[in-house]
Image (cartoon, rainbow, N blue to C red; front, side, top):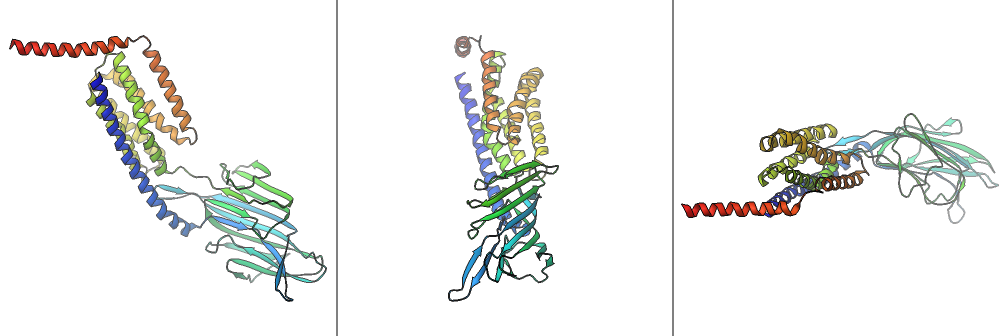
Length: 409
């Protein structure tokens, strides 16, 4: 019994070593692809965008050429974020389209005529902007002054006079979108920002301000930030939901595979002991190889077909290898009942938990506890002293018979 345990343990360790090599290969391949492809995707689609709040100022030309910044009287912003995933190699990237419309009230709070400068910084100097509009009141600005990614528009305002400036555009980016109040904007009066999304799985950055209201829509969510006179810091950031990436997901499944095989071997040895079925270490070797084939095939099949289809194909292949082999070793009944069901639980369902992010650890813990319960119930009346004694006596008897045969010859 001790020699068999050592042999099975050695087979288990070798299989684990194979999984670690496979996981390392997957990690290296995924990392290199991500470094290469992320730049390519950002060039084709756009970088993460951060729209800064505009500011308004007038200049004092006598002496110091000083700029005097004034708070906007009102900010009414509407944003629509349309998530549109892009896949490169083994990875999905969270790209999006954004439609931005901002209506701002520029005020001259002095008692003199002033030339107010409305300064609007675009999110990225390399991004593409379609359907760009700039309007002063009801008048469209046909020739827009853009310099270093900034749109500047002069407004002649009399004492205590104000004017509405509208800016709108369509663009695209990836990963996250921000509205940045900026270093020069210390006060936001009558501020309203509404973001509509076409996705339900919303998330916010740790540094982001939470919305004041959230309303579910047919497409996703309607998120609102409303302030009368906001002075505190912080920005508004929306993180695009990530799609399940085949490469990193397969790598997680491979890294957890040793736990799966350990539980399977453990339960198989218990069943074999209780039912007095002789399973040689070489049989364990081929079972371990069949488990490894599941992960090896999965690692390369997810490159070419959907991750769910690849998972079920690999599961079917691995179960077929084990059951078709073990029915010849221990008979069809034991192979289809104890072995097939155990593999379904400890390989297929165990690996399937990785589709549910955040629940994998809990699912594995529950599976381990259930396994312990089943084993304790099945072995409660087993006389382990007799089991090990019988194993030892059979070896001694086998050696005695062998020696006697040699003497008689």
